[in-house]
Amino acid sequence: MPQRTYDVFIIGSGIAGLSLALRLADKADVAVVSKFALTDGGTFYAQGGISAVLDAHDSIASHIEDTMNAGAGLCNPEIVELTVKNGKKCINWLLEQGVSFTEEQTRNGNRQLHLHREGGHSHRRIVHAGDATGKAISLSLIARARAHPNIHMFENHNVIDLLTGKKLGLQNQRAVGAYVLDNNKHQIHAIAARIVVLATGGASKVYLYTSNPNVSTGDGIALAWRAGCRVANMEFIQFHPTCLYHPDANSFLISEAVRGEGGKLILPDGSPFMHKYDAREELAPRDIVARAIDDQIKKHGIDCVYLDISHKSGSFIREHFPTIYQRCLKFNIDITKQPIPVVPAAHYTCGGVLTDSYARTDVPGLYAIGEVACTGLHGANRMASNSLLECLVFAERASQDIGRILDEIPAPPVLPPWDESQVSDSDEEVVVSHNWDELRRFMWDYVGIVRTDKRLARAMHRIELLQDEIAEYYGNFRITSDLLELRNLVIVGELIIRCAQHRKESRGLHYTLDYPEPDTSKPPQNTILKPPDPHPPT
Image 1 (cartoon, helix red, strand yellow):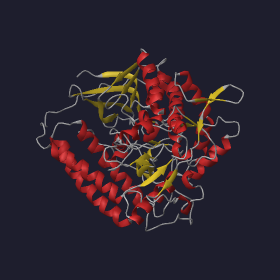
Image 2 (image 1 turned 120 degrees about the horizontal axis):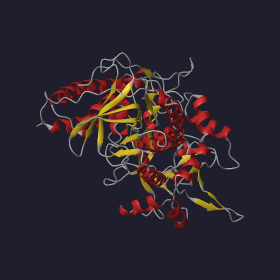
Image 3 (image 1 turned 180 degrees about the horizontal axis):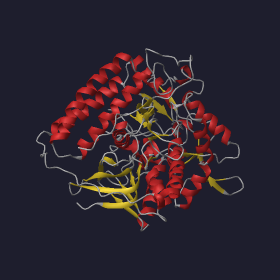
């Protein structure tokens, strides 16, 4: 296939990737690739909203303090301040892009944005579009991007590997493009660019139970690791406390805003329990609530706990949570009259590719924005609704830096074509599905909400066996999207385990029975892993 060349190549079509594309499109030729449909990423399924200081009774200092407290000592204060201060500006930018957020009428008859309150926040500061905020944002940004002549969007394209000067035998290590699998035509071609941006989202599909869509397989983290980027804080996987417990629900998320509006967590007999774990009860940060639910499930030998908002009026519930109300009705659960069965599920990757305040990675010309990145905002635990804010802020920061240097960057080199002469079609696809299932099951069992040294060692042993099998399979057969995701997921699993083994304490989202308290003998440290030297792609 002929090489395609652009100024900027963005991998991922969520809020981070599309907002960057729109900010750059007037001065650059931009390509955006989406692994499947443009709406298949995590943004589209985000329910809660975006945190920003908009209320007169709120303050920048309060939002900073809440974020720092949730991050359990590992947030970067400068990054937190930078992010929070840009919140209002980012909301205004989304309004300019046509996003319709939920409003309310004030006492004097004016209209203003309605603000939710969620766990960890001391004020109402969550801007939202009902309980389907991500969908509203995604559809607006996609429409804007489709209408721009300088944005070229490719659906059903899966990136195989990044290409750098070093991998091509050149003197520099600069990112120059990638090999991409066209899932529609089953063809592989090269995309070259002056700038490459990872906006691929998180990695929660490495766990058996997750609130994430199927595309969240840690592709960007694995791509960056193989290209030579450091990765940090992968032990901090956030488990959302409340996903709908039903065999056919596919881990449907019950927004934290339900608890923010007064929802109570109860046992099957109706008794509450959060008061036993934290004075903030249902509004405690997610790590505390998830561990509390996990503890109650194990202690009582039950399948789930319940989230009850039925004490609110039916009209209030239907107005504020229409998506959740309708989804639960499909499973014969009327949340205006009944509590919702819930369990924790893997939800958000707080660590990722290490970046600076302009989203630059260790590899020149390679940026990472959104959940794929570790900026220092979240520390050991992400506070609710800070994630979409981070996407917007660092997309803008990256656009500033890229716009400043783009004209100085030479055109990328001609990339060598992909070579499939030594491989054949697989007659053992069951190997991929089996290994995929095994990986996700032992990650859930051994590297989940509560960990031990023994569980982590067992998981690492299994990771090493899987890596050998996957490498052999990858080297002998033509690639498929499932194989690429499995290859990336096993790297992500290894990085999570290695970071967890390195941290000899419990902090934030990392809780281990062997070290149940934070280590107060020294200042908190980030866990940073350095990859081996990158090799030419095979």
